[in-house]
Length: 69
Length: 430
Image 1 (cartoon, chains in turn purple, red):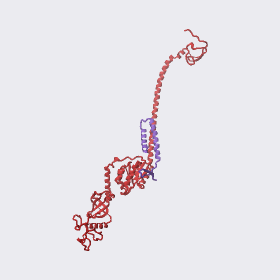
Image 2 (cartoon, each protein chain N blue to C red):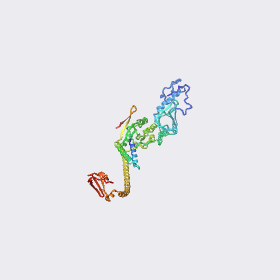
Image 3 (cartoon, rainbow over the protein chains, first blue to last red):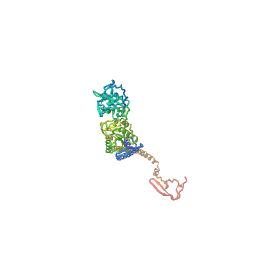
Image 4 (cartoon, rainbow over the protein chains, first blue to last red):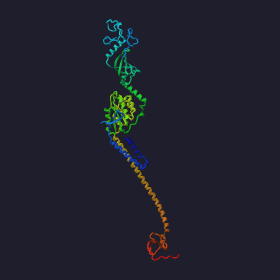
């Protein structure tokens, strides 16, 4: 799952939780999923550090990505 | 170069009536002339060639001598004038006249020299042409061989841009509905630019400042010079074949119009348009708009702006995550509270219903109890009767149930009397 889909899922979960007439067990399941999604997304952000690499094409047409610094 | 055929003796028609202007007089010093073509040598009277009809020189001698003189006399130079009679010949060369109010000169641009000229000139354009004055002996004409061409107000570049823009537009590449949405959180950004240019430096600086969670993959290409267009196309092609990026930034830092020119190349523009992932173009400074800017999904005024458009800062993202957290816990809390209230109401309702029910039953019970009481053996007891029961509670109603010495209970109105059979029961005749 990408950060983007995680953010989209969080939006869905928050929206559904805020809706009316949600059965309690469904709400609890959503809440649990939401907290877990939040945790992973925050973890992803915490690891965030821009990496600069360089694309190298080999003679056989395959590619290599090497760290630049 | 063709030297023409060897003229015959009677062919010295120097004053060809079809020539528009008289040819220059023969060079005064024939020393410069090279050895004439083999020709019929008239009787040598000791004078210089062409001094008399008898020593007349061939036409080719004249024009070739003129060529040597003219081409030796002028170094390459810039000439300004107005373009007229422009013609792009089938053979690939361009022909036109350059003129001012008093004179004109025929000009040619060989096809191999056209690469450095953005677009063919139009009639009426004021231009400066750089080239050499030459003589074309086959026609006996002077012509200016042009290698570079500049139009006033950069007209050729503007014309070239317009031509390219129209061609791209005709193919629908500039249509607004072609613009793709950029990924909101790209993970791998390909940057097509010079690996040691200012653009890359600026982009990296922005990403570092924003603590962006991205990988930047540089796809190197020359961004100026003759090789730049093809290198840029090849780099974009590489991005496509690699397939690892989810966004591409294509650009370079600021520079002169010439420096930025590769980004106006039609091939580069088409490569940008065909890029497999959404593109941001970032060419030069704010004011420079390139053809690439028109086809890219987003035009950023500078490379830094491209980076800012591509990624959001992690601070911003963290605050967005916090907002989701607040929304979810808020919603969950209010949901629990709501359900709790519902439960309490329900409990109260049930209790109310139950107590009503119980009250109704109690009344009913009391009346039944009254009726039962009337029938109760207890009532009989109260009138002085007693009931004998064994230990298991069974009523003993016959002499046959009693044996000498048995213990039994005697139930009277207000209690139980332990009793024992004294003697052998007698059965009475009924």
